[in-house]
Length: 449
Ligand code: MEV
Image 1 (tube, rainbow, N blue to C red):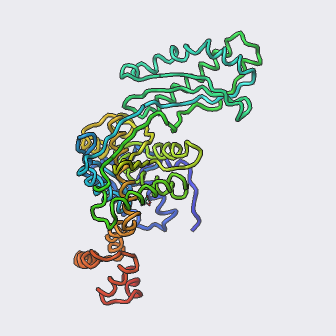
Image 2: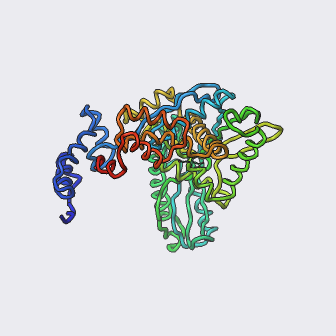
Image 3: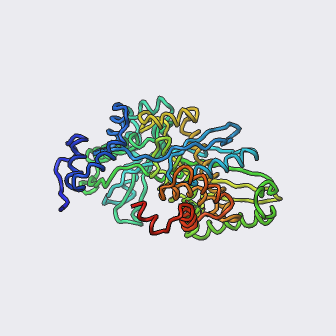
């Protein structure tokens, strides 16, 4: 059947969209229709909220929502909500939270909370002329956006600074108005973008009405947009303990462990191949909490990776120092988060996540999330330099494999017991499963068709 294109799809009802997809793409498959509908929430009001988050919603897509308890952060315990599909992430966060709870916990601080945005524009005269003009009208950017910033100023935020940036060394005629903002508990994207668009109008209007030459009045605004790179919206989290306390459950001496751990972090600092995986593990933890708390994980990831490359080569977001037998491990990562606006007031699970965390403000949430990233990285590197990563990872993945094979509750118990002291691999589980059922692998494939 040829796949049909469609006009006005977004205007169809949800039922009609599903019917159209089923008819045009799925040979009218009623099972697929049933599947999509079975994922609708049984409370129509809740479903409507989800429907309206995006365009063309036809169903929901489940991701597990788990809890990592025992995060002791600045002497307060948190039960951290995490939304993620990867088997071992919540287990590792929980395990390492408990590990550090028993060693004094995490210390976290917000270094700064400044966000940034730009009006990117082209101008064709002498830089000095533009600079003089900019200085003479700079106050108008603030004055003429007072209405837009009023509520934010009442909350303690607003425009912090506006500068003219000369980028003509990189690109002919290219300049920026670079503005810095404090957006308090909001992530601030809409606030910042609205103000930047207003700035561009002010710039164009002031040039037009100036006594500059006709040539110097000419400006082309390229675009107005916040930057998701927020190196001045920065959080730092740290753990520390004597190296003797690190090796519980490992075969290594404290000195061996400390040396290997230190070298592993160093490898991640100097080798982008490793740094990428190292930081990916950090974002396993960060993203899961960012998603559960209704924040934009793409923005947080993009920013973190740019920050990881800020010194000219992609590098580790975590750092270690071992001096006089004391182990200190920390993360420094930018994180532009919001605890009001966006999904935070709409998504019932997001609301629950904020409630569970004690309704943190943005700075508190930055600290919690940085600690989860640090815990995740500590757990990964600790496993990597001791047992290897597959032991813990495959143990968690075991249930997925048994589910894929269609194991019963009884088989599941037997298989879990069997592998409790063995290395789990996909092949080993399939072999054992077949032996348990007394079938060949071919018969298994036929059973699961
Ligand atoms: C897997 O999702 C993440 C790790 O690869 C991270 C790491 O290697 O540090 C375990």
